[in-house]
Image 1 (tube, helix red, strand yellow):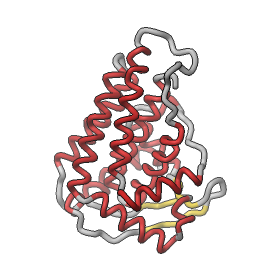
Image 2 (image 1 turned 180 degrees about the horizontal axis):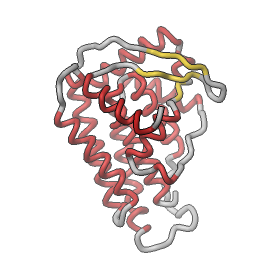
Image 3 (image 1 turned 45 degrees about the vertical axis):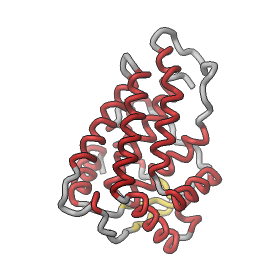
Length: 239
């Protein structure tokens, strides 16, 4: 499947409230399987309904993540952070946390905790999301497989849902913003002093983004934007 075809399909799936996606299990040697999850009737994702607030937040998120590569990356990082906080509030009010928790528990019951921890996103999907957020030409690498980081992220999702990840990412972006402000007046040749260490957070966020896409396609853009926003900000800040 080509990248353009994937992007078109994703938009169509979101409009129809389609739930489910193909997942690939395994770290290294992959085993393909398909999971499907029944709809829980969540108001945000009800079939045939348009969520204009969600659409606008995703538009802003996409625009702001792309702006991280512009002339004012610090300002863009703060804008991404603000949008992520609004998206978290919208998801929380719409019952997304509860819905994701139910779907995760169903997946664990079916695949086992270890199987869920080894979910990997499709390479075509990753390429499409990198393109959506203006990162395709940077060829930023995947995060290395880290079972402990994923296990902690899964435990957090089962306990508190996914919206805390959006707020934590917003906080991290605001911590990076001063570094990005300085980038405009100095050449970044190496890791800058004062850079926050966000390695563990990035490891968890990539898996949370993959998981969110796989269990509910409509959530994909928001959580991919969260991941790509932080990853791009770290790269652009020279951290």
